Image (cartoon, rainbow, N blue to C red; front, side, top):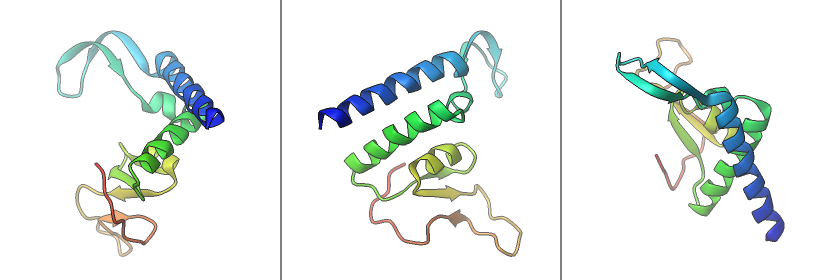
Length: 117
């Protein structure tokens, strides 16, 4: 148990370091809405790097286990890296795709008994 706690603490430290180094933008930023902010955090810039991805994978999987969840998902693109990191992802489309193989939701093909957003 102590080894697992140490591993989780190390993953948390690694993720925070990656977010500070790669995701935090200080200074005036114009948001998509047109509003201005004095800082911005683009988490994908940290979690799509190997060390950030490994850390978020461990932390997310641990939290899903604690919740006794069976899958992780969300709107596609925003949730894709996290769902992939958890290795039990479900990806949702905002609107149906028009291709022959399209589906509004894709996952491992099993129904989850518990869902978290």
